[in-house]
Length: 399
Image (cartoon, rainbow, N blue to C red; front, side, top):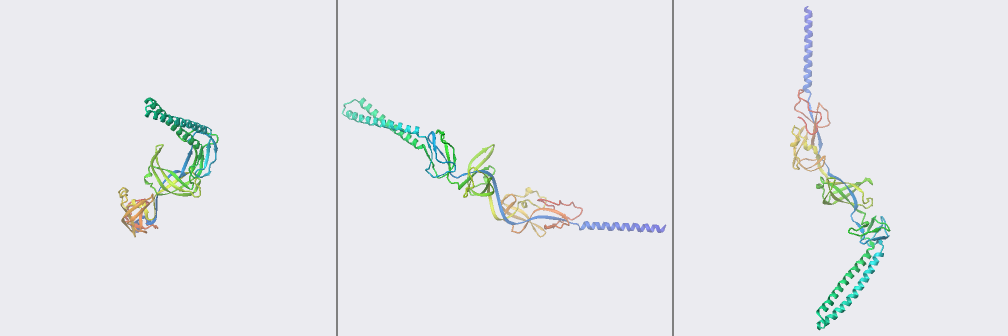
């Protein structure tokens, strides 16, 4: 019985020692386990910053003239067609001159009659004037002769004006090109009757120089404030989807256009066309570079909103004055005040406060005894009983 008690006592002691050893070992393992804070960094480097306004527009020649007619009549002859190259003064078409020639002949006859009547009344007036001065005729007879002479002069002047109008109208029957260029459009056919009224009918559209084109782009009211004359622009057309054409903003028009409650403004972009690839009327997809800076010091924009404590992002100012970023130097985070310039969607220009090659923190994460390629900083709170921070974070990190 005594032997059994000694044996049981040994077993109890052995089990107790084992529990103590396991407890000490477990506690030792937990004590040696530490939480590391991983900082996601980005290297300060030089890069390009650009902001782009996109819109659509239509290609057209810089100089385009609509040629019409100032007289009515039937188109008798057409001398040009689509794509015809013309010089200033070239004959484009003729209107039937039958009626116009008759009008001119009638005006000539009226003018001749008025001229004869004027000469007669002039002689009659001069005779009555001489007799009146000698008091050989009455005052009423003299005034009647004077009236007839003045009326004859007015009739002659009116006939002369009608003759000039008829002569000019006859000259309008021949339609000439007002500029050097290419015929883009022919709106009439031989035998068609055109009527000149308050609005002159268009017969031809002539472009002056197709090597100099322009894009009339419609820019949304939300973007128009960023567009100014002189900015670089590029555009593509469906005809050449793999080719990008270059241009420059030459005009920002002040008049707004409203279509289906959408307000847009016209922006004119020059489009050199030396190869004549671009055709009038093509639709262009345009990118206007409102901000374009090359080889400037940049950091990710998200670095401006990062803070290693629980401070809300709303406490980080964003007003182009001084901004704070966190720089990783060794195992320490150093706050630095910087001055920023232009911003694109993902990059921010740094004017002062940082040097190329420095590492700014953009986010944080944590791991247990992690072997990470990122630079890590050991957290002071390494107790195994403390809650662990999330394994991944965007702009904030717990410490």
